[in-house]
Image 1 (cartoon, rainbow, N blue to C red):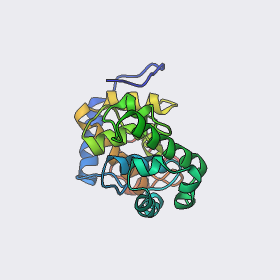
Image 2: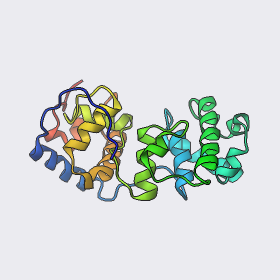
Image 3: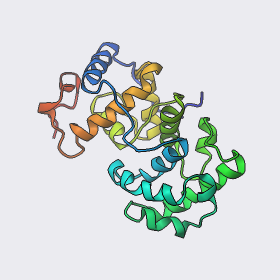
Length: 222
């Protein structure tokens, strides 16, 4: 298993507190799932690349027309970035994303026979794909758990809940992988994302409505 590099010293996790957080998260989100709409690994890969600095709601609005025009890696690989831009212009960083999508489609065609690889290292080697995207695809499209999905919500909650003091996604991922059993990684990442969207807002966390508050070091903080 490839693990992210982590140079900061980590404190041993508080097993009892983390267990209580897990029970609370399971009660809040008993069946969490990926919020992106997709039909196969290719569509999930594309949607996850598009989700950078964009909401899943906005991505889900954009992808139906995009996938209708480019229904697979071969069609997207034959396109130019300017052909893709009209379909994703409403999303942030659309120029970079268009280039990345065409580049990853061409890599899929040229190196992987047009299939999305179920391999962390191979996914990360694709244009526009970092660990977060690779973990999303592996967990949701293939049921392969190699790491912990760390997006902006997970990063924020990991700090507030005292699960990580890491300053980078790699450091935070490593701490979360140490805090939770491997069998829980996929479920916990979905739950933390959902809780970040619904309750633990970046600017105005609703601590008074939060069932995790009793075990949250940051409860009530401004």
